[in-house]
Length: 264
Image 1 (cartoon, rainbow, N blue to C red):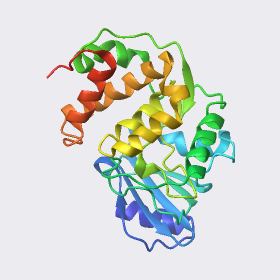
Image 2 (cartoon, rainbow, N blue to C red):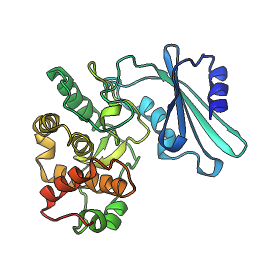
Image 3 (cartoon, rainbow, N blue to C red):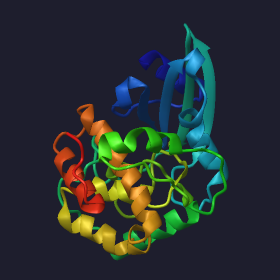
Image 4 (cartoon, helix red, strand yellow):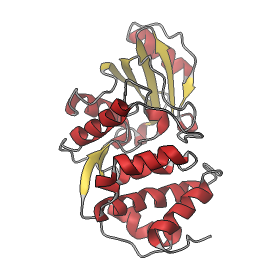
């Protein structure tokens, strides 16, 4: 991955100098490169392409510029030794994310009212973008609701276009910028906000602010359904050892919404 990142920097005529930032299971490597950010994603040749591979480029092409995000400056694809690589050169965002290295908000954060208003506007604008990218599928709900939530599967009827990975490491302090667009697409109403709320359960005042600020979504039947999908997916991740400290809080909140204890 380091060799691939260095090769991409040479081809895109930038010099990578910042600290290494590794993605999930080492599938991506990113570094600052002057006024840009260079991210390289790798996959076996047989598994290249698809939703995660194309997300950043499609977001740059299709999502309105009024949604604050890094702009794409260059794109490069190549293959070597049985692996496929994609390099994405985007604007460097100098404002730090709210959290670093984890999506979980460990303590309450003071964000100005304008930040919350900007987040609402950004999500409402993103919701208007037509796309056939599926970030969440009904099949997952049908196969997993009983296992992780202890309830019968529900049928999702209200979909929207969303970010798909809305958590605190993907949101900057003011001014707001939304980072990491590989997962965006069609998802249940309430999914994004349910995810942000779940990652805030260790920070009660911030969690309450989310529910107040976005009551017009989370307080509806459609929003509750989308939030349950989020909680089910997080409980699946927790069953694999991810976010062990957050797991009991997610389970408690899921039981609060459904009235049913989650399976052990």
